[in-house]
Length: 107
Image: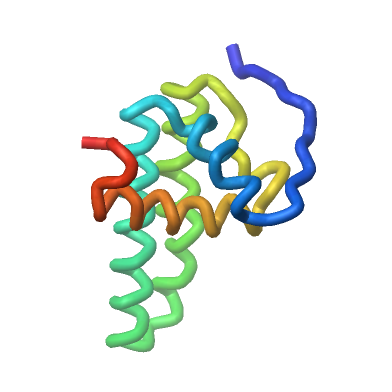
């Protein structure tokens, strides 16, 4: 069952990020987000070095694909990108960095 929640308004990304982390409390979901963000960064680098525009078509598939599986299958909630797309995108990259530097546990 997917849990519904009331739309929340955030005044800043600093207000949003703690909420974002709560929505990503399942370690498998965090791992999938991490892999998806790795994939997005890899595709962007590949595009930068090759100039192949077709690569850009795969960005949303890789970025959202891993994340949405994590939410619908493991977290059992709706992705934050549905209600807060800009902050959610920032949250993905911030959580990726926080996992890399050890501030957020995923592995």
